[in-house]
Length: 332
Image (cartoon, rainbow, N blue to C red; front, side):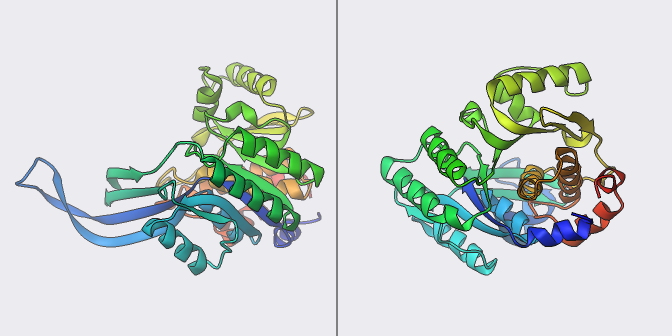
C-alpha cells in the first residue's frame, strides 16, 4: 500500500463474519428538576428515546462505517426485542442471514437512562447461559455456510453465552482450512479457548480477569510481564492490549511496543473496543505491520470516545487524522 487512502479504499473489498453476542442499546435521555414524592429518587422529564445496535452488532456497524461488508452471526430471542433487532438490521441495510431466532433465550438489551452527561441507571435484560444444543448446531451451520463469503472472522465475546468452546474450536478449524484470518475480542469465560488465532485483542480489565492476575499497566515492566503471561496462555500470531487513556500495547513476537493515546475530549468510554477490533481486523486482512495496525486502531478507539453512547467510527474523520500521523507515515 502506498497511501492511507489506498488502505481505506481496500477496506471496501472485505467481507467480515462477526460472531458473538448482540445487543440492543436503548437510551432514554432527559432532565431532572425534582425528587419524587413517592420515593427519594429523581424524576426524569423524558426528552429523547433512541435504540442502537450494540455488542457484536456495534462491531458490524464499525466495519460498515469503514467500508467493509459485515455479516453478523448470532442468536437472539424469538421475542419483541428480537423482532426489533432485525428491524434495526434492515434499517441499517445489513443482512440478517446469520441471525437465529431462539425460543430458548431472550434478546439482550441494555437500557441507559441519563440526565445530561449523568447516568442515572442502566437496566439489563439478558440470558447468559450457554446455547442449548439445537441453537449451537444452528449457529455452527450458519458459520460453515457463510465462511466462503468472508475474508475475516471476528469473535466478539461479551460472555452472554452465544460463544462457547465448541463454537470457538469448530470455527477456528473451519477458518484455518480456508486460510481466513481470525481476530478475537475475549471475555473471561472463554478467555484461553481462542488458541491459534491471528490477533488477540484485550483490554487491561479483561486481561486481569481472564488470567486472574493483577498488575499496574502504567509500569512498563509489569505490563511486559502481563503480556508474557498472556502469550504463555493464549497462542496467537499477534497481540493487542488496549490501555484506555494510556494508549495501546502491541506484540507480534518479532516486534513489540507501547503507543501513547492521543488527546481527546472524552464523552463516554463506550464501544471503544468494538472500534479497535474492527480496524485491527481489517488491517490484518491487508497484511499491514502490527505497529501500523495498533496505531490506526488507537486513533479510532479514542475518536469514538468523544461521542456520547455507543457509536461507530466516522470513516472520514479517521482518514483525515490518519493522514497526518507520523507513525503511520513511516510505513507508507
